[in-house]
Every structure is written in C-alpha cells, then in structure tokens.
Image: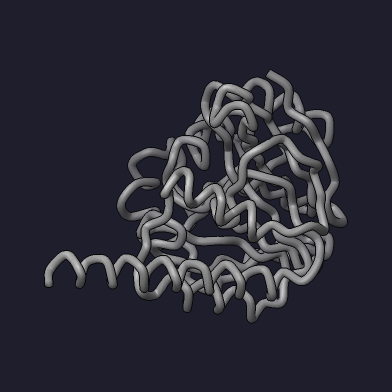
Length: 250
C-alpha cells in the first residue's frame, strides 16, 4: 500500500492512498490533508489498516509527534478509524469535532478528550493558517457531519462531498461535479434531505478557491460554482424521490 504526497495549496498537503479493489476497474482513493502551521492539523485519519502507510508518508513532511490537531468530517472508519493510533504517535495532539460528533461518538471512542467545536468556530494554527469548522448535518451523511475551511488559502476540506471514482491527478481544474453525480448514482451514499441543497449552497458563500476532496482529486478553481451545481443536483434528487413517493401513494 502506497500513500502519495502532494502540496495542493501553500502549506496544505494531500496524502492519498489508491485502492484498486474498491469499485473496480476505476478504483477509489482515500485522502488525508495536513495543514502546516505552528500547530499542525490533520483532517481525516484514514482507516486503521492504512495507518502505517499514512504515518510514514506524513513523516516525510514533519515528525508525527508535532501534530497538534486531528479533525474529520463525520464518524466513519475512513474518516477517523485510525484516530487513536494517531493520538499515540502525536502525544500533544487534540481531536476536534462538532458538538454532535463529540457527544455521540468521539468522547467515548477517542483515548484523549476532544475539543468541541461550535459551528463557525475558528482554530488559529499559527504561521498564517486558521481553520473554521462548519456544521453540515446529514450532508452528505451523518448527523454529526461538518467541514473545515482554511481561510488563508481558501481551501474547503469537504469530506465526502464530490466523491468520485478513479486514481486521477492530485489537483485538477476539470469538472468535479459530473464525476460526483456519477458516484452518487453508483453508491447512493448521501442522506437525501430537503435541507441538503441549502446546506451546500451556504458553503458556496465561502467562495473557496480549492476543494479538498476525500475521495478524488482536489479541485482548483471556482469552488462556489461547483458547490451550487452540486446543490442543484441534490435538489433534483430530493424532488424526484418525493414525486416517486407521491406516485406510489396515489
């Protein structure tokens, strides 16, 4: 298992592991993001079975013991499965997540007490980096879901939003909405709900210049337009589901 490293924005690194056995023949990538600063932060821990590869890759950038924050999008094995392995490797690190995620999962799962983040709360990482936590309940899934926005580089670490197949480049300016729609059609992984489009459009107000995808290449460009297009597709899906339910009940 190989974990590749790419700097996708100033001081933000993508650690990517490609697994060809998932959704063959295209395969699937699992990505973590390291944000450097006086207090470095890692977003996503990866699966437990990927810890050795991810830790070795991160050590090529900085000693794992220097990590100070470990965050993730929602409670799921690829997002936070290796949390405790990372906490053992980084004795000064603090896990951080939103109130719901801490209350229902992290306070029991983590070997170290987490920092509970309010919606919109900022962690100052130093070195010109600051990350803002944003609650996105049930979007794309999990009532504890949230994202991180690094304000200096305009990088939105958007978790499972825009999930796509394949082992593409680390960074792209090409369409990420079409491949995300195709992945949704295949996996049906999102918790469709009436507020989903509105939640995603609220992220567009951040005007991100970089979308850091957990599954797929990071996107550099007009992140707001991509988010609005994705929101439109989820609105369509919700409308189609409601129409189908009404037809079935008639």
